[in-house]
Every structure is written in C-alpha cells, then in structure tokens.
Length: 96
Image (cartoon, rainbow, N blue to C red):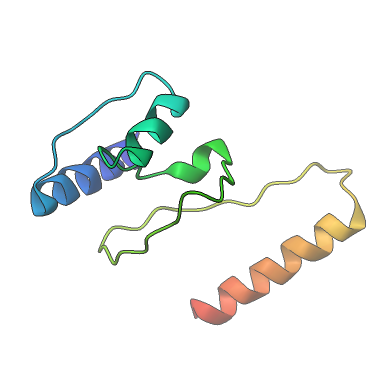
C-alpha cells in the first residue's frame, strides 16, 4: 500500500509541476495511444513489459524511491542464479 501512495505522490507532484491534467486510461493500449498523440505519459510503463521502440524512457530525478526485488524459483537454472548474483553485486557496489 505504501508503494501506491508513493506513486500517487510522484504523479501529483509531476502533474502539478508540469501543469498536466490527470487522464486515466481504460487499458494499456489506450495509454500508448494517448502517449503517441502527445496527450499523456505513463509513470510505470515497464509494468506491462512493453518494449515498443516508438516510445522512450525519460529519466527524472525525484526524492522518493521504490524498493525493488529479484525473485526466482528454488529450482531455477544456474544461469539465472549467476545473473541474480551479478545484479546483487552491482547493487551492493553502487549503494554501499
């Protein structure tokens, strides 16, 4: 629940700063249509694992952060385990 409240705060602050109206889409396809028509933006586009080359991530610095988790099955492939360890080491190195 705290993550939802944080996301709503980010949404409110960005909308106020950029003087944007809130536009709630019925589905992700409508969101993409609104973005293509320059009528909207999506704060969490990767939630749908959308790799559409016509859209781009825009980075912005914001004082709120969200926790991130990497999860695997107990019987996952050894390459997956190695990948998770690599990501973990990078995270620890950059957040020490």
